[in-house]
Image (cartoon, rainbow, N blue to C red; front, side, top):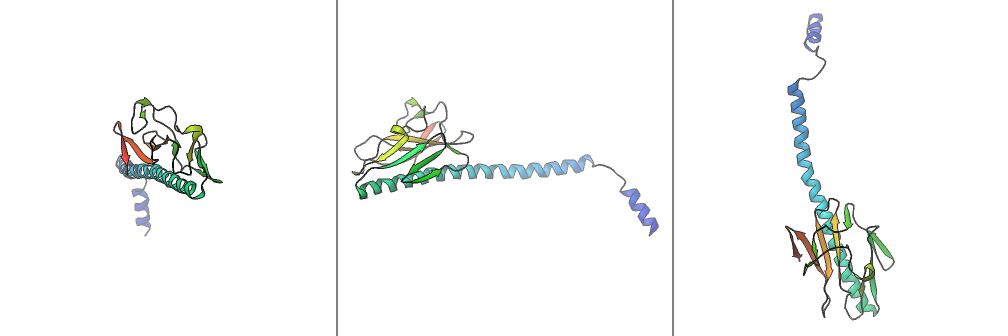
Length: 177
């Protein structure tokens, strides 16, 4: 038994790792990181898409509420706090989702001719919903932390008010149904 113990001590008498062992560990870490990063990107895209959908639903609710009650309703944006208010309720945008723009992008989405300069173009940074079903025209832009994604919620100037969603991709605005 004593001979085996001395042999084991002599065999494991190294004080560091070989280059091969280090390469194996580094390779495993690189693989794990490369698999994780696309998943995080998907989650960020899902968060901004969900915020736009939520804002559209709130707008539809406020439009119907104005028609049913016979009085104006408002959705007010705070672009500095990345929040919005309606009734006596306030909401903050999801983490890494902001009211913002991407420099060099033209708007509004339906007729992009002028550079976008502000994330909310509704008068007084609020959408007004009238009892006759009309909605004040304007556009609200959402972006993510790295400013690679730009989405828009817009109400065009028209005789009948409707709410549209757009996504800016590959240099053009795409209408989202």
